Structure formats: C-alpha cells, structure tokens
Image (tube, rainbow, N blue to C red; front, side, top):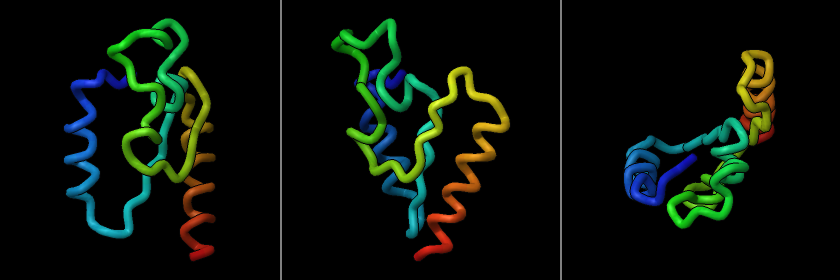
Length: 81
C-alpha cells in the first residue's frame, strides 16, 4: 500500500533515477491499492498513478518465480527498444 504521504518521496526517487528508467510494480497493493484499504483516503490505488510502470507482477504474496518472470518480461521489453 502506498500512503498518500509517500507519493512525493516516490516521485523524488523516481526523478533521481538515471535514464532510461524501468519500473516493476509488484503485488496487489502496489498495483491497485490492496483489498482491505481500497476505499481509504490514505491509500493510492496503484503506483502507476504516480510514476510510469513498465511491468506488473500480480502475485501476492510475491513469490520468487513471479518476480523472475516479471524481470524476464522487462528484459524482453528492453531488448525490443
């Protein structure tokens, strides 16, 4: 889950990343805000509303295989450039 207070910190870190920037969003909370806090005013419903996301890994809890799959998908996307 991303509290609204963390939005500025996330944007600041993203802006400090060198180009090209690649973002992998992992887990339901990062991707869509989570189930239990979906209607909370203090939760951002997805990091893609704050920074551009290249790959989504939907696994929750995150398993190593799912993360590896996401990294491989990102590698394919990078190689297509």
